[in-house]
Length: 375
Ligand SMILES: Cc1ncc(COP(=O)(O)O)c(C=O)c1O
Image (cartoon, rainbow, N blue to C red):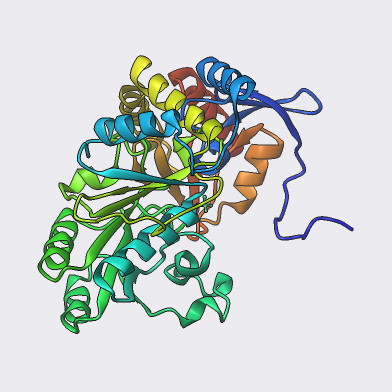
């Protein structure tokens, strides 16, 4: 018996981590410009995070959602407030896919329709509806493919309008900045027209902020760059700094009823303690300010490298586009230079998703090591 072999593994065994550094079982230190796939927000094993999770497990780690959980209530008060949606309510689950699954389902309950509009190169997760709205046939099983989904290119507002005019669209789901797809984003004019056509036709607008949200783009939510207000916002990744937690923020237009949504583990005591400590560190350490400061520093510094054709993305969700495929470069960075980075559907793109607490000094190290790869 062995593990179901679905991951092509790098031959590295992390044993401990702190801040933006990960140490393997041989004691080698790796600089983390991948954040475990955009998950690490306040840095690995942040002291506040460790303290609050430790104290919580010593009290109670889990009980079902059929009891009062004050930590969940606290998160339900603080998160809408700090994210700029004070009148939205929060439903908690365990992952990004689950957040989108619940968002799509809630939209369908709300307007009793089932068709979804999604976008080319999207990634929304691997559960039933989430994978159906993901533009990658390789990971969509025949069971999932039965859902009614249409994909349009980003910015193709005319096709969206034509589809919505048919009267059977329940929701539109969109990443404000595409993650796995390669950091493309719609224009502000597109996002604003999209919001308008959805509102006029009672189509639910879902903003997938699982990767680009929680401060990664330099604003708490990346859709804020376009001045829109989605009906549902899905969250995960940076929310728990590695502890599994996801959720959706829901506009007051949606009426809850007992049993409409539910989960065994979602919003348990430990998950909430993790999420609350992330928000506490965000505030105490002005993490968003650091994202904007380091992003500007990074972009200025790396723009000088002649090998880089373009720097995509915003904040600390960046992609360095080369005119060659980066798989070998990425391997070299990991095995020789001891730096983790990410990849994307676009094979020429090296993705950079460090902890949001990354420092100038650490960016300098990446710069030196990357430059040395070209010598
Ligand atoms: C934009 C986006 N949505 C959804 C997901 C799915 O999240 P999870 O892997 O937690 O299910 C991801 C994961 O990479 C993502 O990047």
